[in-house]
Image (cartoon, rainbow, N blue to C red; front, top):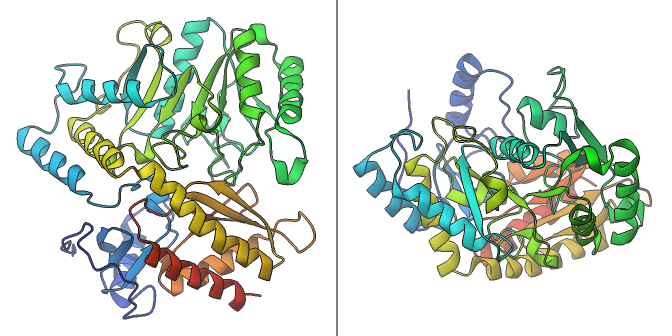
Length: 448
């Protein structure tokens, strides 16, 4: 019953090609099997079953070739089957697949931590611990902050997404589908208002003052271990805080012995046009969490921070059976090699210029587009009823469905489900991007 994968990688023809309806008959057949054996709680945005991927395309079991504007939710930034990733993974599989770093260590884990010390913001001494998922990284960052400060409280922000574990669900703002029915959640988590320029009209310093006032009144710095924030909001709608917001939070945290934790899981590793989104304003967090784009599609995550903070935790207090698996570490080293050799941070800025031009033209023609925003290859449009800030989730869903039917993989997000987000691989060609946004433009014309 299993399909045999085709050879993937950038050697795939970089074309959009539809030979059946989407989804095609073979994908529909596999979807019936999914319904029989996979829990319904595991949703699927676009039910085509992929057999090969690379560059900027995904090829399904029916032979359709789709343009990828999702990157597996910002994971395959170097593309699927990037040469250095494939080379490293093959070599590591040939050597060994697992020992558990906590039992018998291996060099690849240390190599990844060394690379993270070099690439993450700040020139101070840094150490890392490796995990499997972004949620694990965030949860462990909170553990480290609590031990290092001797304090318990955690502040997060409106529209935040930090994961699906019990603690990270408490930190996540959106109820459906992430939290609904899963409580009670972990305590000592407090929420402050984020900078959302389209909706609050505040400057960065003004928005920071508002947030700090809430923190002072509801929590108090003497009780607060850390402030955790996505430098560019991910699932919450690709909201870019107004300039000055993050620096003001950094200044307040420093003055009050509170750790600043940057959740760079979706925004990190060249995605926003810098290695990390914090780099845009020169903000240096105490702890950084990373995952998604770190390993070219393999499960790996990290907490990287000031060495003295990372060392505050007792031996054995951090870890996990699969954390920093040797194959995932090999993939990460390959992905970092691809990013550095291809200067993919610069490529992300080139993608932004192209995508922003297309989205601003779209906004000029369609009043439903309330804002074009984002940074690098992390771009979005928020859809609202024309002339208002009332979310229009139905239009976002309809436009995305049109794109899917016409061979372009798109995603929506946002607290109200009204944000159309674009996360193309950093290896995608300009030609594919232009064609993809031709389809996006058609989608808005067809759903008006």
